[in-house]
Structure formats: structure tokens, C-alpha cells
Image 1 (spheres, helix red, strand yellow):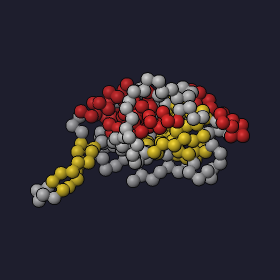
Image 2 (cartoon, one colour):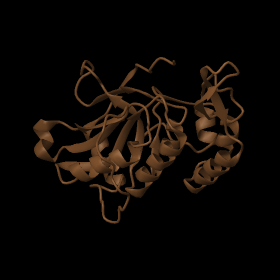
Image 3 (cartoon, helix red, strand yellow):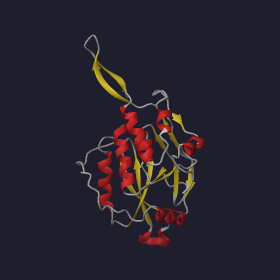
Length: 241
């Protein structure tokens, strides 16, 4: 397991407000038709974070969404449900702070499509967990494995220098029975069909499909952390707001 990035960086309230303005302002839910699943425990959770100095903006301080954890089958529907429940609760903007070790490939693509559908900008970062770095501070985060496919869907993608993204060959765990009749778990690799789907999706979102080709040539036992040059080459994101 790769250790989280822990460096902090500071967000000026004026910069956040300007950035939120570029990200379609308050979230619009008109036209969303994806059915919502019943609420249940899932690794990825969502919460609201208020940014800005309350002494200056009061109730009008921008609010953004923090998404943290593993992406499961129900995560896309849960995200849209969370947005629907919270739109209108304050000055909510289409900005998501994302920190995830990965998850299900298909679900991650669906989450990426949900990000694009509401015009969300995604920043690979998370709120300072203990507030030790002061007001409006965030720390570097990770977006690994299938998380990258969710990130790809965002209308704007920001990967601060303190954060990192990593890729590797996709696989699914499958339970089988060995010659002795014992249950065993093994990895099932893509036969090319999902790679084609991912490449098409990636290109439609404005990211180079060559990123998928690169990922599929990296052992599933390792995570390749993308360099800043690779992030730029594949048009995956920018380092600043």
C-alpha cells in the first residue's frame, strides 16, 4: 500500500471563490436521471467542506465536496444522491476534493461520468485532517489505480504538486475451485474489451487514450506514480487552480 502524501498547501479564500466561479457555480441537478440506490455502507464517503473566512463571507462561504475512500459499485449513485440532498444547502459549488486508493473500474468510469454531468472540477487533495496548518488548508492526497478513471471524467482536473496519481494494469478478483476442491482467489485480467471501452471514454473526456495503453503495460503488483511530465503529456490535469 502506498503511503499518503502528507504535505500541506494553502488555499486563499479569494482564489477558491474565483476557482468555484470557473466551475459552473452552484451545482445544477436538472436532467439527472440516474436512479439512486438505497443507502448502505460503502468505502467511499462524501462530506461538505466550507472554504473561505467565515468572518468575511459568513453564510456565503463557498462549500465544496470531499470524496474519500475506495470506489465501489454503488459509489456513483451515492455521489449523485449526496449532491441532490445537499444542493441548496448553502453556497455549494461543483468542486470535489478527491482522495482514493482505487476500486472498481466500471464504477470509477460511472463516477467520472457523474462528475462530468454536473460540470464538476476535481482536485486531488483533502482537507487538513486536524486543522494544524490553519484556515483554508488542504493536504496532498492520492488517486491510484481505478480512481484515475473517475478523475478523468471531471470537467477540470487539478493535481497539486503535493499530490500524486498512480496507474497499473486492471484486474478483478475471482473466486474459483482448485483441483482439490478448495476455494481459491485469483486475478482475472481484461481480454481487451474493457481496455477498448476505457480508451474510448478517456478520449471523449479530453485525456489521451495512450494513458490506458501505458497502464495496461504496468504489472498489477505495482503502482506507477505519474511524473509531472507524464501528467502533462496525457493531458490528465494541471498543477494549479
